[in-house]
Length: 178
Image (cartoon, rainbow, N blue to C red):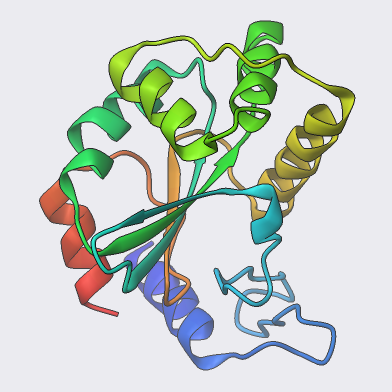
């Protein structure tokens, strides 16, 4: 298993986007490999959180009702600095997840509303809308296309991922060693 995983990681690093923007990996039996890339992912559907100088980039998929995601935000994401975090809300655990995600999305300050709920437990107050629901459905579709089966899921700037929950020191190590 380690050899296959190492081979897949090498494929991710060595292969670049085709003309259509989707990398093709021969070593992975023709599977599509999705690489986190600011110019290729629909970042307009993500909540952008800039901490410090924002030099490192990560993408995180989270459900607002996921206790593991809330713990990941409190114990990991809140402790890292000099990073830009693109949070893709993927409300799939319950109907209430969709309501909360849409409410966070419709907040005047999305990043503040997201952190208030995920870290402090303060419920968002904005009203959900159909437009916000469409964004959440696109995020769920992206989650499925990328192959994520559980949350939290994190991708680092060089395309490695998805990684599940981890300590801040482990995430910093992954971000530094591109």
